Image (cartoon, rainbow, N blue to C red):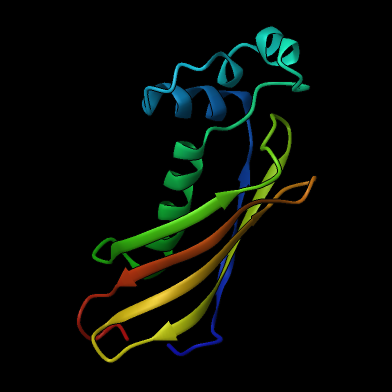
Length: 131
């Protein structure tokens, strides 16, 4: 692995169930994540994914690639375009830095039909011999 390496993309269908289940699992009871009528009253066309679900999906993307023994050391992400039901988010990553101590920095982008839902970097410690 070296700087510039690209991770294979991960396509995630954004379903109503995923949005609601993610909000409930993270104890985010804000109505905009489960009540379409309330979301519309607040100016959104529908319910939308919360940041904790997005954070979990970013973590899954990296552990799917690097394996269950990698450790996420720092997750620095920012939300952009909302993830609405019926859309698809495609996560992609590029290794930007690899150090001799088994640490890699990965630039993450999660794009949907509107634009970039999530962008940022994740610092990952890899098991010995993985770098």
